[in-house]
Length: 487
Ligand code: HEM
Image 1 (cartoon, protein in one colour):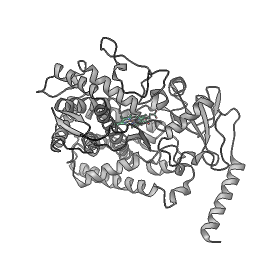
Image 2: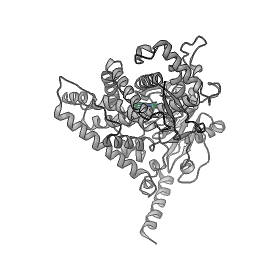
Image 3: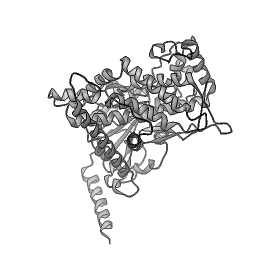
Image 4: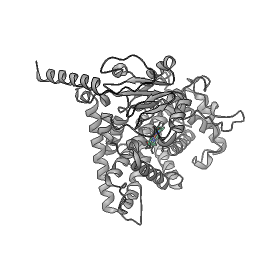
């Protein structure tokens, strides 16, 4: 027997002993599908391109809270529908406000720190610091609006240079979005072709489109070392991001002037001088990485979906453009102050976020003690997924949920129709702090692009697919070609 075989057998035995001896099984667990010994349901979803749909299939049989077993002694729960999600994240928000610290790959990447995967008092302080900083350098300030409008102009010039020929423009859109985060965090923008910037974007993409709560490597760490695991790629990507961020922080330290705060990194350096135990270089570093990862891929994916839905629904595109022409004209740029007048564009953005369901399973949560929820016991340290897509595509809430229909966000008079079940950013204490930034970016990018261009399916090409490919944390569209034709 080879050493590897001996090691594998020893590992399996260890897992069996661990499962039998250590597994606590509180009574009254939620129902769920049968599972295999040791690995449970872990491999049921491997290779699936639509894991969020695979989970949904069980809802009809087992209800709104379902238990899966992921690896030895590891419970994994999925919560469906607005009622149960609201109960977990709002009514019992303090019980469910934690991120798991026992998911192997996620832990290796995020170290249980930062705003995305941190917990406890340090997370609360860091989240507040991050939100305040987004307000200082991002939201609510004219400066950010001007930055996005400038970037929209550069993006439009780049798109114009394609001469109306068929192109996959998703990378270009991603460059524009990445520059907004780079502006907030590092105070600078990059050329779309800059090799360092392209490496940064590729790293973010590799991480965001791989990590997910349900990844088998999180539960059986040895899988991370098998040759076909994506772990190496993701850890390399994290390494590249680290080098980039550390270099930028070093440059900032060398030119730091507390009287002239230029960006998020400077703000952090200033706070660090106040000897706050939360504002350490390590925390700053994790926060920068979190903002880059969370803020780039999701928003760029939303823009890519918006363009796709517009080429497939030219009537919607036409209505957006008419509204812009009537209320803004074709000379001055679309601004945030136009938002009240551009209700149809606003509804189109919301419908994109609803239908694309960009982060369909949210980010995993956990509970730190056995917790009573919806008549069941959720054991401490389980992984809990709040199924965003089950609300955004609920046929009892949305008429024809699979259709792109911005009118559902408007009243008959064309005014805003607030919909309670619209929660692409989830709810409660861990809900997405980037929401105002995302909505501002989508409004200014799309408004200004539609003022200048019409997006079209290339002549002779079939209508592109709208099937969602669930990769890591996001749902991406399949690659598609588009002609960007000046108006
Ligand atoms: C279309 C774009 C986006 C979508 C659909 C989205 C969605 C989400 C969702 C569903 C969560 C999980 C909430 C939960 O677990 O309860 C989340 C968390 C988070 N998002 Fe976003 N997001 C987007 C863009 C952004 C942007 C632009 C930023 C940064 C500027 C950002 C930063 C974060 C952070 C830091 C968290 C973790 C918050 C915490 O754990 O306290 N997101 N996002």
